[in-house]
Image 1 (cartoon, rainbow, N blue to C red):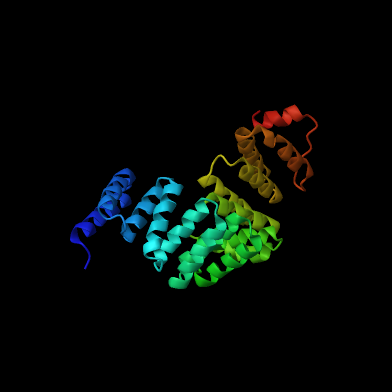
Image 2 (image 1 turned 135 degrees about the vertical axis):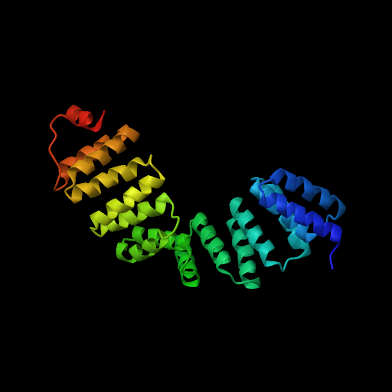
Length: 270
């Protein structure tokens, strides 16, 4: 059995950390480590606290101290991988994450590997890693969103659509709704695209690009009044959208001709 005093200290550290009292957790960690400097769990805890505070270098020092004593701990290897990625030390991050996967295969480790490959710019391996995550955990909205985006970028909107539809179930970010809207637009589902752009704007109301694209989608459905309202929203948020709006209005099948640019600006509220 472990030292009861040390166990009590760790419980207080975890309680403070979980309550967001990171500085208090740090002070308790440092006090405990002065008494037991070689404890791997304490070093791991302090690394986690420092990571939460954005102190990456110090966190890596303590996670390495923990690993030097107990290298076969999957959670410690996972945190070491996340810290290395935060320091943009991608090779080291992938090493630690591979060790974590060997010790305790888990979808969480696969996600961290995929994120690391993404950030490292290794698109081919990142694509395969995200695909593996979707196979291991169909409920991962992050994996579905990222893989869907990559498929869309590769010119495969029909393959991207079901993944992005899955990704927006639940509390999806505006970026995922925006990507779904782009895919629907590419598949000529303009009504569905407009609905997705509206969801993106509910979450991120100041997204001028989403507002412009909403206007274009609505214009394709021949709902010109709603399209003009969307364009007004975009122009109000960012005046530089005027050129895109003018082009859309004059070139789409359901557009209108504008000879006087100032008259169009007046219509948009400029």
